Image (cartoon, rainbow, N blue to C red; front, side, top):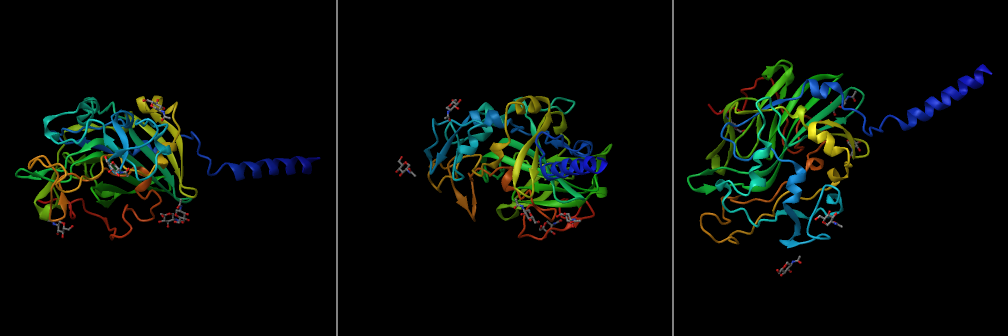
Length: 348
Ligand SMILES: *[C@@H]1O[C@H](CO)[C@@H](O)[C@H](O)[C@H]1NC(C)=O
Ligand SMILES: *[C@@H]1O[C@H](CO)[C@@H](O)[C@H](O)[C@H]1NC(C)=O
Ligand SMILES: *[C@@H]1O[C@H](CO)[C@@H](O)[C@H](O)[C@H]1NC(C)=O
Ligand SMILES: *[C@@H]1O[C@H](CO)[C@@H](O)[C@H](O)[C@H]1NC(C)=O
Ligand SMILES: *[C@@H]1O[C@H](CO)[C@@H](O)[C@H](O)[C@H]1NC(C)=O
């Protein structure tokens, strides 16, 4: 009798063990993902604020090769994953030729300006990816409807609709080990102890316009256009993503996403959503316009020494190497983990 009871208990346990480990459906994110989440500062002179992906989707139309595509010319979070991966979510207002004039409203996203306690109405994204029994990477994704690349004199480079940036914290045995910050097409990683903190939370700075992430305030050693353009950060607007975010798990074995409870409006919006939209691998902004297509000399498209005024929109979180083994997104560049926050990042 007792051995039968033991056997059935064992079988139940075995069935549970077989089903449970990778089923993260609506399972809460680990506490440490919130305890050690970055506190981020947008630049004091920022003009393109955090955006809600649902507001973004309401203002774009799916296009392939500059022609409308998809069922009815519109897209929502529910229908996003039905689009093919060559689709560009293109501004319904037409090409944005004068980004500095403060229109359209959905691109500047002033609704996303954080309150004095750091609450932005635009939900962030927190994605946890368990790598193995000791290591979990937590990704904090920042989304903006517009990336203003900055310029030299009247020449401006790398403007695009849609901007995905991220910070990743690697936890080993539930303790923070190191932090990675995306900077345009690259990024930098630092050992945990060497960055600046507010309480237990690392402080990060988001550069003006292009929203690259840094661990210091000031002029940054990021350069395009032959070194003529650099990024600038300061402690402008505090943004605490943990007050409002959508949460997800990324299963590194199967490559699938599931919903985890979020916070704020991100949590309430998530109630009626699935994680399927994250599987879409297309572009979150207009396709890069051919050189000379928009022919106004100041506002049109031009490319100089390989850098263009308007570039194509970025791909989303699923394309940011969530299954990485090193700290960095790129597998082709070397990935040093710095032990000094002034290494390579600060220009002066
Ligand atoms: C897009 O539309 C243009 C005309 O407006 C047409 O010449 C071109 O073939 C179309 N491209 C595709 C992929 O349908
Ligand atoms: C068509 O557009 C509406 C909103 O404009 C949306 O609610 C609906 O899901 C779309 N239908 C399809 C099949 O994409
Ligand atoms: C993630 O990487 C591991 C090896 O590090 C590999 O076994 C696994 O298949 C990868 N997952 C996906 C979804 O590609
Ligand atoms: C767990 O994954 C991390 C990141 O890929 C790796 O550095 C570490 O060696 C792995 N640990 C074990 C025990 O497999
Ligand atoms: C700026 O970065 C480049 C390449 O990343 C590096 O060679 C250079 O030494 C850096 N300059 C400073 C002052 O850190």
